[in-house]
Length: 202
Image (cartoon, rainbow, N blue to C red; front, side, top):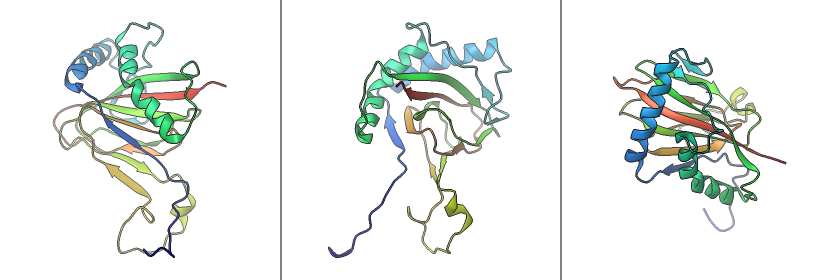
């Protein structure tokens, strides 16, 4: 475009994607922890999961347990998200309100949903075999769904959703209001993730 013409992309919807270092070592410990929870409570809870297993919220009171160790490891990424947003990061006020695991076997998926009453949400991929299903985000501007012009070239200005391929060790952090879902696991292996929510205390 020329200097006399600009596109001001106002109010973008961010999704931060990171690759965690030494994720193979970290993930082995996390998998053992998650499958132990699964064996203790195979019923789990029903949320956005369709036929998959959704754990109850992790115990975050024990500061030395595996969930808190995991949260401490990924905290620098959270600080980076705050920096990119231009938010004030006060560790005494940034709290994880809930953390849980999801195991999706072949044919399982998660329907579109949001995480109300939080600032940020996240998904960390502990196990993500090929063809296990992408993370899908949808434009929260619902007006765009009701009145749409025809387009011949999909781009960030006319798309109402985006599908993001994920790999083991990937950490996605996004605004909690962002509608998102997880596509069907078409592999023969489990897809295993840890999700959590972040609030900022007043």
